[in-house]
Length: 433
Ligand code: SF4
Ligand code: SF4
Image (cartoon, rainbow, N blue to C red):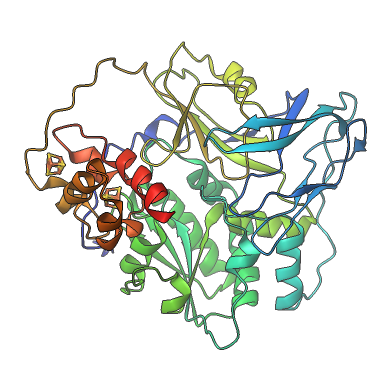
């Protein structure tokens, strides 16, 4: 039997529920009449609008320009007209200006075809990644050109590709690895040209065995210098720090980045977006989104234009009434209520779970220590919770509160149902000031 790598400390095993959607092939979603495209859908400063109300836009045209190094360009996903620019609240509660685009019903989409092959330098590729507005597709939406800009004097030993997709329900990366394997591997080689690593590894959890086999077969046929490392199924292995512990057996120190241990981590969906940018000259204007959860009858993996309203997607899925929507996965995603909210570059899935149970009872901490065992960051969630509850934010900060990844493992195992992650988020927000 093949050895399965993993990280050692902490982690939990929630039911993955991937069987609900992992056999649903990616289908293009085309029934769009209006998009809402936010200017702030990435980590960092919002893009500045380049278009005004009434302007006609074409698919792929830059409509928002990055305003600082940590920012990203925004492009129109469709042909249409800017009918409004308004403030909206995204599913993650960020308030952003957004273009409302009325889609040209006669000719809604751009045509993207393979470009003539060109030998790019690493610097040209990096510039293309920036120009095309590519951000991390795994959820955090960190601008990819920033991650791939290696400071002078730093060296990349390991390029690690994150095909873990450890959040329950989500299957968008899984389907991409099955259906677009060749393109993903080419995208990875473009990334390698930028960061010049000594080794390239893809980490994939063993509940995606068909994806592991598919990528291995292509790697063998094409002779790509890429290794696949199958991983035990354990949450939160998709977190960069846990993934690096599992694959390169190195721990990123507190407050440091993967690059400080000579590693760069890139998500599968991001590698695919980079392939599209280079091979098709196509900006990051659409992405694969999983639609799943107990309230959705027809689970799907859809290729969706950025800015599509969630309610338009739900219409396709025979979704039953619920008050329990999540953007992303159930462990780290964002609960939201307004289904007019749009899909952004970081939206990997929309879950409509069973209606929430009212009157969830919390009891005092029974000092069972389960949260400490579950914490992959080696923190003491029970102690941090007590400190935050008593307003002792500075002491909590001194106890490494900022190392908390908000992964939810502590809350998942807590028999007292204490709102541990909520407390960590609050403590970080107040303690940072
Ligand atoms: S949410 Fe924070 S404290 Fe809780 S298990 Fe995750 S890293 Fe540890
Ligand atoms: S798991 Fe919950 S009850 Fe147990 S020690 Fe941690 S906070 Fe207390």
